[in-house]
Length: 267
Image (cartoon, rainbow, N blue to C red; front, side, top):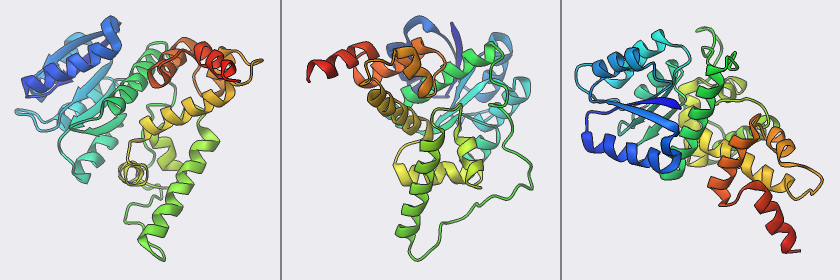
């Protein structure tokens, strides 16, 4: 069972989030709740939460400050920000903390579930000691990164070029253990700016996009009858075929073997 901490000063928001998580993850999660940042830190110390979902605007201690303390206590805690604060400065601090993602309220169901699926997967890997490097810092402070508006012959043309470069990186690396921070480093962007840029290019966050990209590749591979589900899982970046099957079913409505059978039934 994965231990999850939800910190939000709005009781209704906490309750609604708990229900959404329970709907998709059932009793695989053990959820505790905090109504301010200070309580969140104390609960984290006591419960040893593996995932922390943090609002930002909270009394006593805001979500970013609380997350900074949590990160110092446990480098492997998977931190997610779910907030109404659409400000680049907050996103920048959140990503310095090495948060998995920065989601804006109201958050789409698909986006929330995709990020939580990845958080659960990472929490499980960390518990097994198999995430060496994943939670590493973004890199030296003096590393060369781009952190400004995209410029070129025209803003629209430049954004199209940037989107193509990002998509090329995903195509070449989706089968590996990659994160949004890895993609940012590969393209010489700061984490915070890449987060903003990716949302502008694809109208969704990196984790959600990567998940759907992997599932589309899995659909293509499953049309080869000689390839088993475990092989397909590994080829699209999932070492755990059972976990892969759960994600595949959420997105397609069918487990991989059912999807394959449906494809050949149509031929």
